[in-house]
Image 1 (cartoon, rainbow, N blue to C red):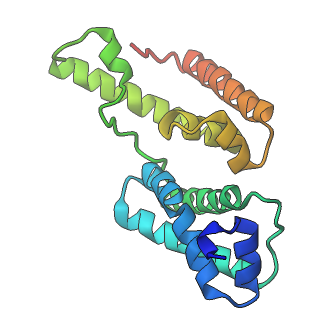
Image 2 (tube, rainbow, N blue to C red):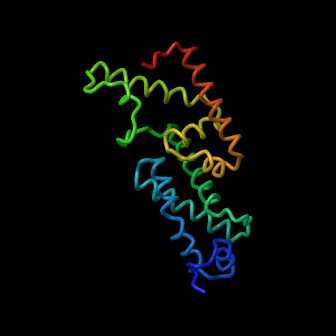
Image 3 (cartoon, rainbow, N blue to C red):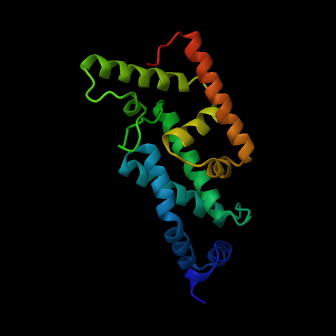
Length: 193
């Protein structure tokens, strides 16, 4: 039977048994989704390639040492590893990922401002900076869910799988993140318009 027709679990068993081509099939099967996720988070192709490579080095090491518990969720497990490596990168850099509008949606587009003046641009930049600054004060679990949902457009179902919690927990973390952001905006008397 061709390895491309095998399930992830079967390919993992073959790889652990010494079939290197099974690992290649696994990587090819999931590389686009995982790489796209990483690239959307770090916004730098070279860095995304490094994190992608580090992700699969961890995958290989874990598989070789027998540390992987096959629950039929190989892609989610790999995405969790990639997510943790991405978080590690931003912790080391001591910064949050910068949001860059890719042209799809920008909240300022809804304000009806066709050609913002220099002053309006400065205000917009300050609002973005103020929000980014507040994110660092959120508990890590809340900040992680908010970043995944808002900045990376990941569904709550995928967030739940990536963070290994229920959908209700992911939704709750998002809710508390927004509540805490509102409180911080009020306490700091920030004007967001």
